[in-house]
Structure formats: C-alpha cells, structure tokens
Image 1 (cartoon, rainbow, N blue to C red):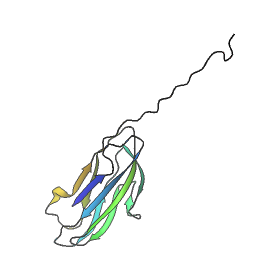
Image 2 (image 1 turned 90 degrees about the vertical axis):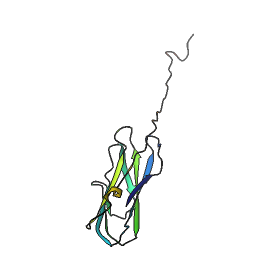
Image 3 (image 1 turned 120 degrees about the horizontal axis):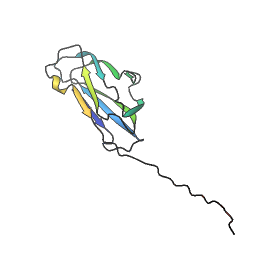
Image 4 (image 1 turned 90 degrees about the horizontal axis):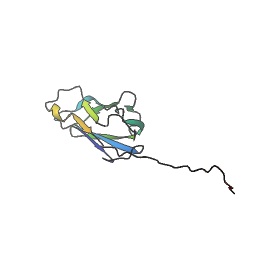
Length: 131
C-alpha cells in the first residue's frame, strides 16, 4: 500500500513542503524488490530527504528492497515550491511479487501554492535642496 501526504496543502511560493511517503506490505507474503518511484514535478525543487541514501532525487527512485508481511517504512522528501510548474506529486510502489490489489499502489498529493509578491517602491527627487 502506497500512501503520500504533504506538510502544507496551501504553501507559499518559495517555501518548503515535506512529502511523507509510506509503504506497507499487507501480505500475506514477504515482499522483495520493493521500490517507489516519486520524481518531483517541475513545480518543486528538491532540498533533502530522510532515506539515508536510498532515494535518488535525479530519478525519483526510492529503493526499499525487502519488506516483511505487515511491515511499513516511510521517508520524508523536502522540496521548495516554485512559482510555476505542475504541483501534482505522485508516488508508485512496485515489488517482485504479484499484487492482487494494484489500486492502492499509487498515491498523489497536490498542494495548491499561494502566490507571494515582494512589492517595493523607490522615490527620488530631482533636487534635494531646492530654493
């Protein structure tokens, strides 16, 4: 089972969000060759993750390996929200064994970014010491 959530569903553009990816093996057998594909779309810039090197931000591949019957594992992927691009972020889990319930192997999180502007004004005068 693949589950994905985001730390902020309405983040400001330029702020960071953290996507939590959770994988559970509902069995009844142990799973091998387990991996998750979660390549960040163009609306985000990768910052960091908590996988200890098992997540490749360039390909979006999180290599889990074996997952015992009933076991779960998760990682957090932190990204900066860009001003434009796709924001729908989908993660899909696969394994070496057949899966009788493929409908729960994918999960999507779609934050809706809040535009942010930094307006400024500069005022000048033609003569600072007029008569």
